[in-house]
Length: 414
Image 1 (cartoon, rainbow, N blue to C red):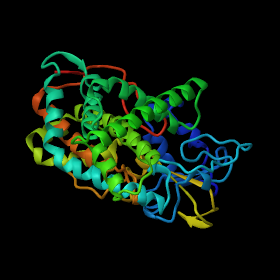
Image 2 (image 1 turned 180 degrees about the vertical axis):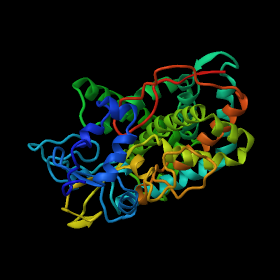
Image 3 (image 1 turned 180 degrees about the horizontal axis):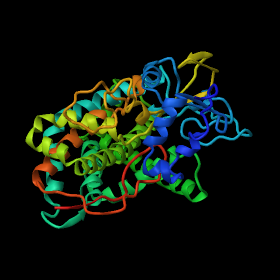
Image 4 (image 1 turned 135 degrees about the vertical axis):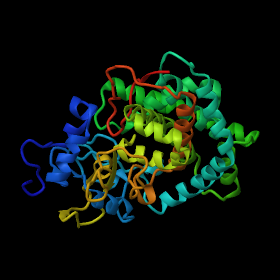
């Protein structure tokens, strides 16, 4: 067993060993997380001055506890907080973050609630259009032979859908995907100088684009989410500064395509490696929504959520101090045998306790409803169109970005 908050020998000793730089963690993190959950479910990593939770009940309680905070300036010095690297000689960031991801109340509610209201209303109205877009992309894929499912289906569908919802130029989807990949580097704890340049370049490009688009929609409204939000802003219904709106539109574009791509890819990979489950979904399409939840539980596209301790308190039986970051490993919670029966088994027929793949509390993923709609339609349409779809022999390559789990390519044969 662990010595206090330190894991025993033979078990992961630092969070850095869970990063994709470690091939074992990149290819299959689940055995590493299982060993931690069983031997040291609340681990203190002094290397980066961070707590790591791997047990479901601790993660569920912490993520749902609204007293925990997210603003990077509230983390103690010398930590990795809010997705950015920090050194002992750096002052903690004092500027107000713009993204709802890193806001605390009352600013978090002020920013998130009107955006969520408009976003969910538009998703509801557009659901038939969203499903039609998905069908059209899948119908354009080859009926026979081999193709890369990530390239032809998993990547183009989410960026097309979120672009149509927002109202951005669909002839620039390749650019949006490129800029999104660059911006997401901001969540990487340690970056190379080249990655810093890419992050800056992608962020500036998207900020400039949304600045122009917001002005264009004020001058000439259209039937899209950007118009909805600038009109709510203009009427006073949404108390948002331009820079806040711009930053969170960027977040919707980036988050709305990258993680859903991985949800699609991970799900199809699971169905093709579990043909009995694919056959079950083909025979019982009414299980589609439950199948999405099982994919999210078993192989979620986001692997970590974080909070900052607001005051001295005990979490999971361990005393923590104000300003200490807490990282919650979502895949570990989603395979906790104290909560889930046979957690290592992928089974869409079992109705399970709620997973934590989307996080929880006030910071639960704002895009969860859209991701569920897209994944459900893709699974149903793809398995129906390709009754004999199979996975040929190949070496899977998982993306090397920390805190995300998705495939670079997935070659399938129809």
